Image 1 (cartoon, helix red, strand yellow):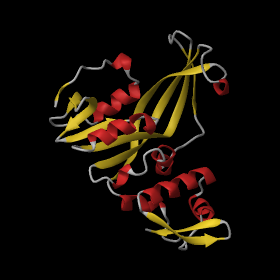
Image 2 (tube, rainbow, N blue to C red):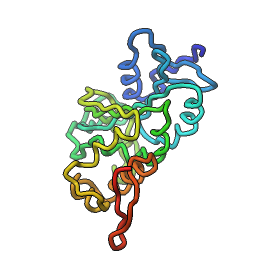
Image 3 (cartoon, helix red, strand yellow):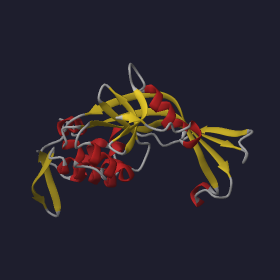
Length: 228
């Protein structure tokens, strides 16, 4: 390992930079070159990569590093989000409101669906953070039509509310309620957890791919799942 080039805070979102500092404890080093990749934090032999979205973008990097190193992926989810609107030049705050959307640990499956097999790797772990954040928006005309031309300029960490570490497939079984009758259909799990059908499908898909769940039959057209 060698010291890699420092990436300035202007080249990364504030959320990423703030989370990186949280993991800079003890003799930890940041922006370290490892096997041709720049790693966010290296601490006591553990490579820590912070990814705020799009696990597909980091998949090949993880696969390469896992061959020889322990790697922990850190993924923040907004349990509470404030939407802050600013003037185009960022000089003045126009409004600040609370977003109605609140994420839970189960929302990790929206991204984990891209790398479901990695959790079974002995060198891999993922730490999911539930955070409070501010999302900074400016009306520059380049943003999504859903946001009516407002672009997301930055995400800023306020606090880490909760966190959970997953080191092996069985760690994910807390998403399967003890009260849920086994075997179960996706629709049974969706009802028990109060989540969307799409998220329920992604959850069971991921748990099947990491061998935490198995398909044991069908009920009508629906697959029946049980603990693997």
